[in-house]
Length: 209
Image 1: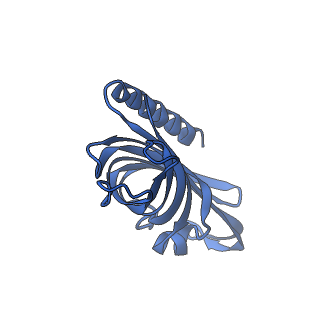
Image 2: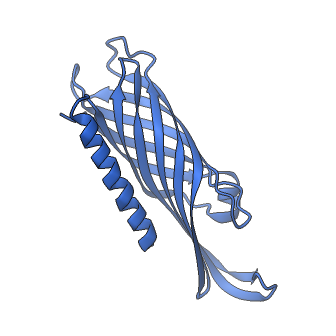
Image 3: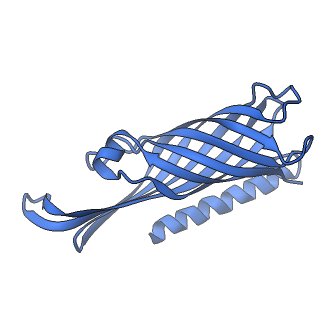
């Protein structure tokens, strides 16, 4: 957990510094979101089936024009599940009766592009689609009774999203964002093929002056 916190603080510090430097010359938009995530596929069936309400993300986006925004995003999502006592076979082929707990923290750091198809219009509610790619720092901890193991890795990640954005006041840059996204996290260890999940998010954005 300490390693995860350290990585999160480091990413946040670098992220904030880069945004401050860019904002000195460009009208950068800073976004902050609360995220809820739901595991998919093998992640859901083999590792953690519970949804995660412990997530957030932030972004620094440069408005190239009224339709396109380019920038960086980062986030944090905490997944956890404890399974009832059962009989498990360990790596040395011994059987044991124990409670199994899985804990996974995912920290994506991504280059991101957002497209607003109606950006040239004066429509109050603007739909958007987004795409991002980069890496995720994954911290996986598993406890079988009192025995635990953990692994930290950086893995390839792709994200696709869609939603709506609207200003708090017409003609203003600050506003509200509501959306959803699909996240491919290419984690392949311990027989796990990926950590793919869906996210729903709500947040705000405002210009850095």
